[in-house]
Length: 189
Image (cartoon, rainbow, N blue to C red):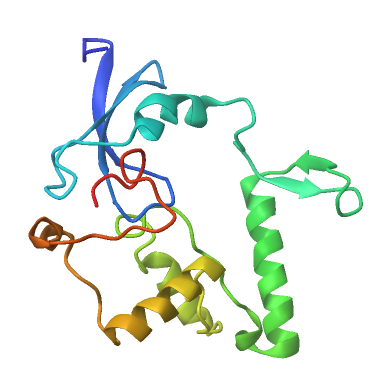
């Protein structure tokens, strides 16, 4: 669908758990996503996005099972019994939970877990880290188990270095990829 008087193209970033950090051009009409294309705003991804995002992003955003408001558990764990609560009530619960933990056990008792999404665009260690730093929360590694294993392997092979710029991939004689089909996702390798 092309942009028309009823639709507008908005800039966005891919929400998937992938290091590609793709920029998106999202066409919106009547508060619904009608088209998703790669944006040329990011020179690394150059307007190319994976099929998962191009084809399924609108269904993901507008899907029936997507959480749209806070829920509070009302039954025993595992019972899947929840009730809708207001954002104010949800934030109060979070505030009181953090306060109780900090007052009882100190700020280091709060361990943030914030690993998801596009690593460079949204989750690149910005506002969430600032918030938890101000709170005095634990500074333990917040990455997932797969990231810890990957990091250990990388360090043992290459030392404690930040990594190769992705633009240098074109200069490589050999590129070995484990556990990923780069023709389908993470295709900018």
